[in-house]
Length: 441
Image 1 (tube, helix red, strand yellow):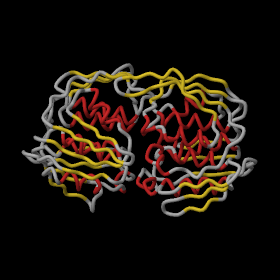
Image 2 (cartoon, rainbow, N blue to C red; image 1 turned 135 degrees about the vertical axis):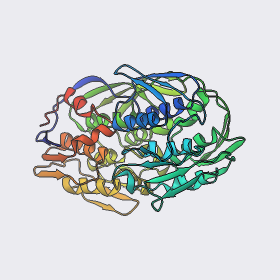
Image 3 (cartoon, rainbow, N blue to C red; image 1 turned 90 degrees about the vertical axis):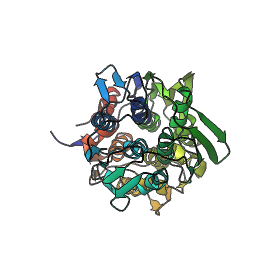
């Protein structure tokens, strides 16, 4: 079977209702926290992607009992520091940065040495950003200059720490919070604004956490040695996955789409607000609370006039996974759009800022890109009538899916490689596109 797709035509107009797979960030966090519970935990709508399977497989290697089917996943937790494994065991995080970084927070108390590895893409990513604070708990790390593979030797007695997270990384903040769970005393984190799924789950589970919010930073206080109750959870749909279909609808003619039960956590809604500022017709209906998270149905309509944007940097962290798609919208704007302070984009599965520029260059859209910014010269009359090939991008699922949306929105003949990469985060992506009537070979 070919590991690429061919797209030769734009998508026709559509008027549909769809559901999107479960949120990846919440799926991984649910599994990791459930492993620390002292009871049986069950989830439905768990994202059955490679990253989540990697999470479940790592937990199984750590002695956690897991039962999984298409309808639910059940985890019987071992309690805090309850992992059972042989010395020098090897955990494989695959392509998942969330798993790789967060699970280290649970291993700082492991008494036996254990090794964490990942695939080629993950092995190029920086882990010093979590190693440094976790060492302060008392654990020892032996790494490849801050990259995978990493050997971890935990400590019998970890001490609480004070940690300043200044990158706006939810992964760095969360791994310290998880490490703090099994620490005698109170860990205090001053964290630049970023996704707060971990904080909301802590609150829902009634773990001892206090949060003091300011404009740019949050002060998070976590007390350890508190038993974690059962976490039974229906995973809301992923806004990052929904974003592909939001942009496809906005850039298609005479189309409308309703996406049901989407997680609209404010720390993830940067893409929503950026697109609204650019004139995209998108609204939230049926808003409700679910176990700490806000969810809603999203309604999107074709947008005839796209406005350029000087993107507020305050929205960067809450839209970090969606910028490639936002760049596509900027390509059709009447004017110049500017995005800055985006160096974090290059800490993902591939150097995404450079890949965003490459995709635009292939489309004939002028852009000026530095190592942390991009200026896009939009053209609302853009027309593509050439062949475009997208390949060699380190198995980045978002590059593949963004390229598919570009092909269906702007036309041209596209050959897009590494179809299997969608298994990392959104295995049903092509099925959902097919439901809207796209013609993909």
